[in-house]
Length: 351
Image (cartoon, rainbow, N blue to C red; front, side, top):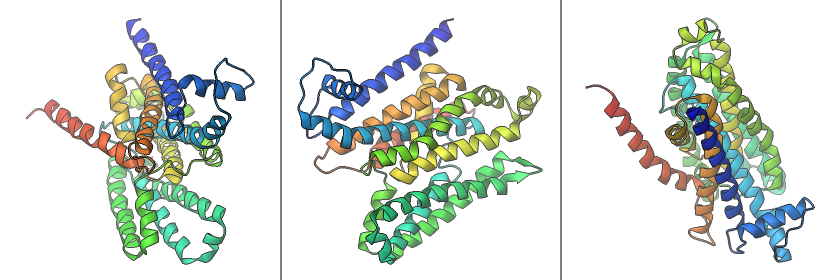
């Protein structure tokens, strides 16, 4: 009962924290709005009027500029969080993250190649929508194709071998990064600026069109991965033990890889490379909930959303009116945490 109460309290606390962060983030900027004003504007859209005074232009700024960006950050953060938690369960390795099997590298390579192609053909510049969506489609396709290739290499006897998948992911990641480096070398100054900014991640291109485009690809993993949590708990005991407990291990591996790839690919396609969220968020949640994936995965979704929303708020306000790429902020947070994690893991290994 105490454990159940603790888990319910953790999830409830994270939910309340996410709501507060959303209200603060949407109200912070050149035109400041209090959380009550933000709430009043949102409820006004739903036909509910609150006795709170706000200017008319606040509604336009919040609805057309800030809210799509915040919602996009919530979606991508949640997707990266659940992807990281599920892949750590799949590899049974606390240092695993979505970049481990080349998902991000494949998306990055495809996006950089598309940036070079866009600069070489005038048709992309004359049709802005084609220019925007071609980059998103290329990044998404790059992540999916790379993951499918790694999975096919790792299959043996009809099953995916985790150790082989890890090695194949490292090799393909190196190959993708070499192609990305080559494209960066041949890029002109304008293309190089686009490549650099995209590779560091940004939510600056957020719009309701972008939000609606990525929502199904992120919501599906966020909703389905918690249903696989009991099987992931059994997988933590070992593949043989999980099979004896009735888990279809081969099918579970495929489901985890596909769903994690879908969430990460969608985020990378519209926001670029945002590192460390998928790595550090599950560890933060474990400190409060323990290793039970039935709580860990929903907690990772909420925590990932909170962390990325806060990181984006910092990056767009710390040097306003300019803004930093959000990947820089997540790296500043994530790198020291990663070093601490390595030191902590080292201490648990007997000499």
